[in-house]
Image (cartoon, rainbow, N blue to C red; front, side):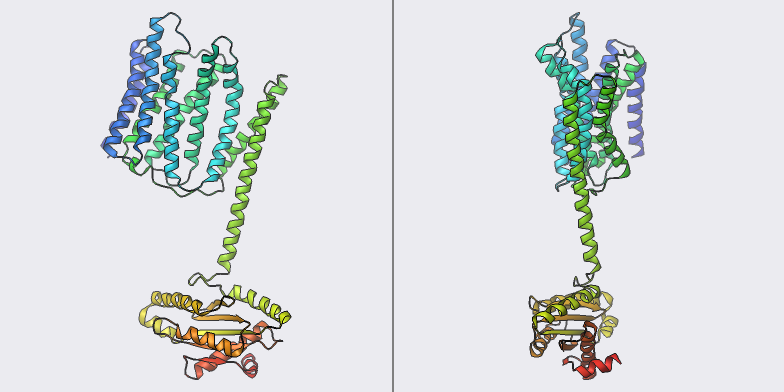
Length: 483
């Protein structure tokens, strides 16, 4: 594996470093660039054949786009030597532009394969980044290209297609990089290739806006960035990890990292910063575009805030649920019981309905644990809880009180009805086990603690009487137990 990586590093060093020493403006320079692009496209084809990735259509599109983009260099060179003043647009532009739809469609296929779930947070984050950068592209690239009277309608369309293609590529790249899940080597190489093309196009745009004629070496360095993008595409397709690139990934947390939050903040401020810049120069030429950009960014930020609030509410609800739920059985725990019983007592105090409470204790549970192990004991508790639940009525409420003890609240149940229900539960106990239970009916005046104390006293009376039975509490039992 290290040998192969060494050869890959040598090939990349020769391709990128050698281009910097090739004579300027000659056929050798053109052939070197075109050769790198075609070589990368060939490596992608080999990678598809050799590695059998999960989404070959994406790689075929990328191979076609890379080969087409590199071919544009050769076409432009030939056209410049066939005519003193080559036309614009030309077939070279069609070749250059072929990369954008191919890469955008391929990335869209990859995103859909990796994210079968709804990942709205990543989608909104990508939309914020794309909107902010897209507004810059409109002001500095798209609008000037569309208003140039010297190139005609078709020239306008082609000139606008370059920044629009970059925006589409940026949107797909942002969406891919912001998605959750593990990022293997092929993913990182693919992301680096996309960033190379976006950085190269962005650098050329800045140079053109500065009305600066890039020198030979500066032009070579920028061209080397695109060559690096070609080679990174090939490396991503050839790396063994490409087989797992298309696996469905878990959604990332809706909470943005500090780095992403800083990036989103900067991009969100681009629209007002553009307006301030134009106002200072007394040339507010893009007020409508900036206003629309501000509105869209504002709506996206509000949507993002709404997602974070929703996530916070869901997490709060889950924390509350965990706080009142027994982890083993899924029943309400003692904390939930201590809240629900007083509330129910207050309700029946108003309605006058009867209320019974039962405390259940699995017989000889410690011996069962010692004989079969704690895992078997946990399984018994879960199975028993599920079996007992089936014997309860809809209005009844059962909770785990602690250890092998459970409590049951039986609204609108008389003493006889309560004993009948609890006895059905006892007979349904799985694994050949049994339980002892104490039942107490609310006397209309006692507190929740006193009611539970009477049921607990009846439970101990059931144990003393030989276990595997249901005992009904008397008021004096509670007084004795509390003393």
